[in-house]
Length: 102
Image (cartoon, rainbow, N blue to C red; front, side, top):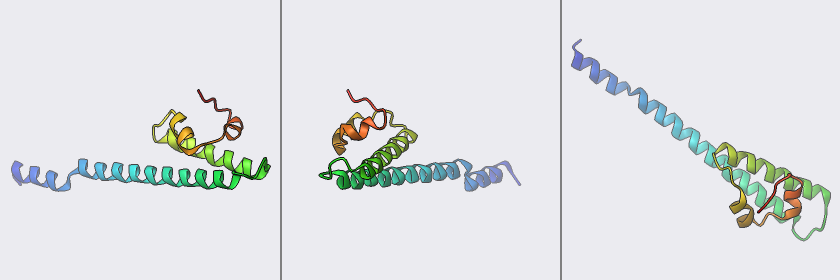
């Protein structure tokens, strides 16, 4: 086998390409998980809206928001102020998380 044949074989195997594919799949899974977590927050907030201080629904909303924040941080998003405003997360939900909005 010549050097040229070896180089062609390396290009065919393309180990960097395999890693890129894996990284792409990981990023796609993170994005999907983040979307699912956001949907759960929206659903929990909708259930909470107009129901007063139902402790069970408030607890479910806090749990969904906390999990969403954790998922965002795993994706590299450290600041949550924009999504708090966009999703309309009430202060009473945030109070149970220990979150501070500014």
